[in-house]
Image 1 (cartoon, rainbow, N blue to C red):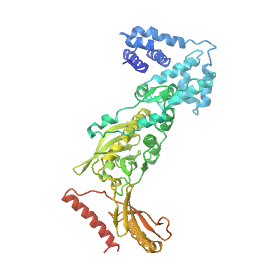
Image 2: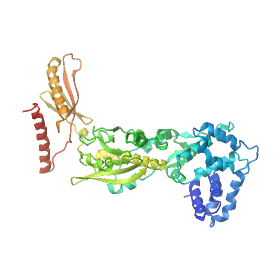
Image 3: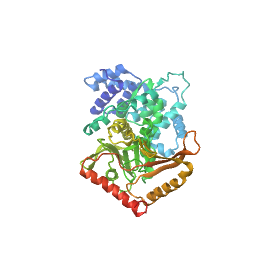
Image 4: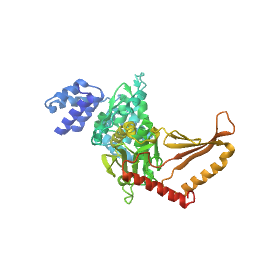
Length: 497
């Protein structure tokens, strides 16, 4: 299988850095030009050379060609610098190192600026925000001097079809022991040459080659949808100031998969009255929770909170997912419940202050979302999968998306007293937080079709706990304790006797 130009580039670059020649930077700059110009024959010759040093003269020729511009070959450095200052919001002092660099080059032109940009982009080290700003504004300055050119082929944006394939659920639920391997598998995103150049100012080449590929059929629109991954929002030191920073990754992935997410809620989270900082749902099951803290060292360990807040209300499901964030460091875990004990197991750790770390985490979160469907199907006590149609004394009970709906068939004038009574009872339950009691979600009278006075009182409640047949004596006792505790609470407020 033939190697791509990027793979050839990586091999040659590694050989040059290992040899550590005096003019290493100039050689790498020339190598960057060969890659950018698609000079495959040269790259292949250099890659296959037994001694890379014998190729240095040939490699340097590219630099000498670009380094010898004539006076009328385009804008000079002073003009370019003034344009960059116009585009930049930074002070003249910010550009001191750049000015010093070009001060050593007599009659520097746009070609020298391009070489300088290639050197900045060619580094495998993570770029600082200052370097990104320099690259962005110098590129804008160079483009402002460009002459209009003929319309080029823009390729085909396949974002929609790629996203459909990218977000397709997994058919198989992997064993917990193989989760790291399965979640670490990568699907490269095809991008145009133009977007490749844009992304190179944010990611090193190794990351680019791992997560992107250049193709005429590209995903320009998709890149806009995941911009929160590429462009890191600012944050302060408090937990709440970090929320946009974390959600840039988590929210981008959830939006791509169309997953419902929420914050600071106990709704359908299997956490009792505890409220996770972040939760993602499959149907009405919160099977991916997040706990977070800012720079406060006295705040609770979010990894511990993943376990202490969780009440395991499922049967059949082998594990659920969680993440713990401490300022910029985010760890991903799978959580299991065995022999009555919850365990939180770390899989990955990423630094969200690094663009590469954010991109890697984004792919892991996407891989987790692909497992939502098989995880949901593994739940054996899902109330949505139970068809509960019970007819007795003109009462009907049905299930709807995790809620219970009770219909009391009666005339409208007869419904008033029952409506008031039910509102009073559920008001007392809410006010005094009586444990193990369902909560009222909706209560209203509805007319029957084509009838004015006949209809039904519709009560929609949110049940607590889960539907399950006790497997042993201990579970039966636990059920009885729940029921008796609820009855005791209702009795103490005069609801039952």
